[in-house]
Length: 331
Image 1 (cartoon, rainbow, N blue to C red):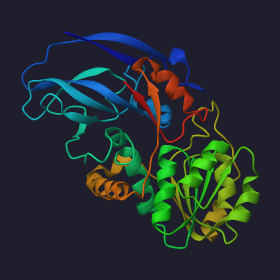
Image 2: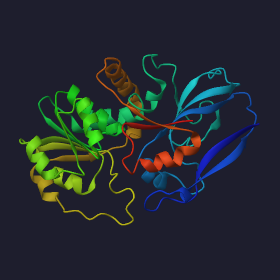
Image 3: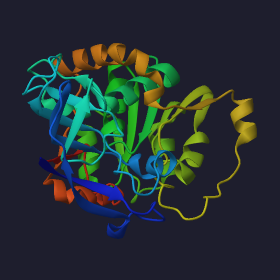
Image 4: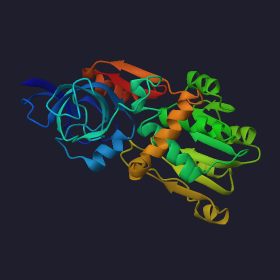
C-alpha cells in the first residue's frame, strides 16, 4: 500500500479562490497489478486557466485539475519501466501519486526530450503552454514581418513565449505586464516596448509605441484592456483570444462598450481557441518549439514553489501577479 495525497475541489470557486475551496486528503493506493505502474509527482503545473475550467469540466469532490510531470516508481508494465518520466493529462490533477494502466491519464512519455531541454519545460515551452503560444500565433494571428504585435499578460508563461515568437517572425512587439520588474524582464526577452499597465495610460502608450496601429493582438486578459487595444487595430487585424484573467474572479459579468461595427467595418478577425482541440498537431508544435528552444531563440523562466502542500498558495498567487514566467510546484 502507498499513502498518497491529493487536493480535492470542495466547492467551486466564487470570486477569488480561497483555502476553504480546496482540501488536502490522504488516500491509500492498492498494490499495482500486472499491466499497471505507480507514478510519483515531480513537478506540478499551475495556470490561471485552472480557475474557470475547473468550474466547467469538474464537479465538487473531484481532484483539483492540473498537469504534472511524474516518475514511474513501481511497475508491472513492460512499456513503463521504473525511472520513466511521463507527462500527464490535465485531469490527472493535484496528486502526489497515482496508478496508471495502459497509459491511463498519461499524455506522453518524456523519453523523446533532449537532455539539453530541462524536464520542467515539458510543462512550459515544449508542452501545452508552448503549444498554446504556437497555435494562437500561427493559426489565428498569422504574424508577418514588419507588423506590430501587442501582448498582454506578457510576463506570464504564454505571453512571454508569444512575444518571442513575434520577434522570430519579424514583428515589432509591445508587451504589457503588472510591475516594473516584469517590464524589465520583457525588455531582456527582446520586446521592443514594454509597459506596466498599472502605472500608464494604455491609450497613450499605444499611440506612442504603435503610431501606425496594431496588426496583431494576443489577448490573455480581456475586459476593458481589450476594448482599448481594439480601437488601435489596423484594417484586417487579427486577435487571438487565449484567456480573460481580468474576469476569472468576478462574481458578475463585466459590461464593456460594444465594438461590433468597428470589428465589421475594419474586417478584424477575433477568434478564441483551446490548445487541447489541436491535439493531433502536437508533434508539429513540439518540433518547432523545441527547435527554437535549442537554438536559443526561446526562453521561459520558471517561478518555483517548493512542496506539494503549498499548491493552493502558489495557485492563489497567480491572481495577484506574483509570478514571473511559468509557475511550477516542485513536489
